[in-house]
Length: 142
Image 1 (cartoon, rainbow, N blue to C red):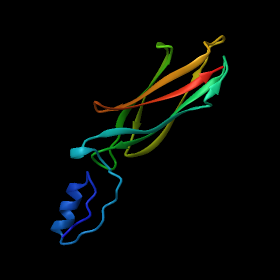
Image 2 (cartoon, rainbow, N blue to C red; image 1 turned 180 degrees about the vertical axis):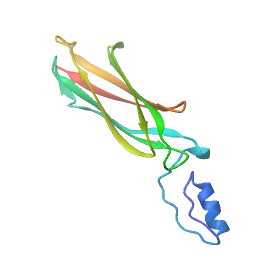
Image 3 (tube, rainbow, N blue to C red; image 1 turned 135 degrees about the vertical axis):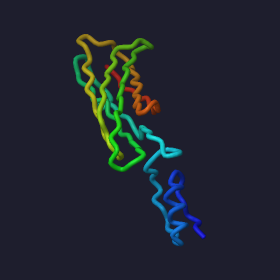
Image 4 (cartoon, one colour; image 1 turned 45 degrees about the horizontal axis):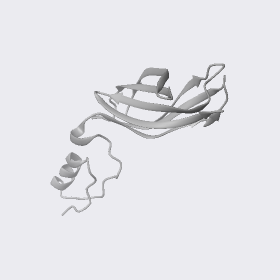
């Protein structure tokens, strides 16, 4: 009897059971629930986190793309919205084709000269196939 089945890999587990064997399947899910395509942001961070007017901030994101098939490519929509005091200051968008795996993405944001002093909030959104993942980061202008 198979006791160690990772979530999200039920088809593989059923094949293992039918073949009469059982093994621990890896913990990392290769696809979303029910075999869907999905994206999950793992972490976001600004580099550097404290800047001056006219400086460049790299808005970094690390995310996982899950696909139905190992060689499948999907269109990932990356978006970073930069806010200061509730006002939209920048909206950086791009689309990129990705396969199954973990990716690091970085988009530059150039602060104007002069720039408003204080905290800036960045909402990072990744979308694929109608599914989204979102995380927020902050940086400070002094």
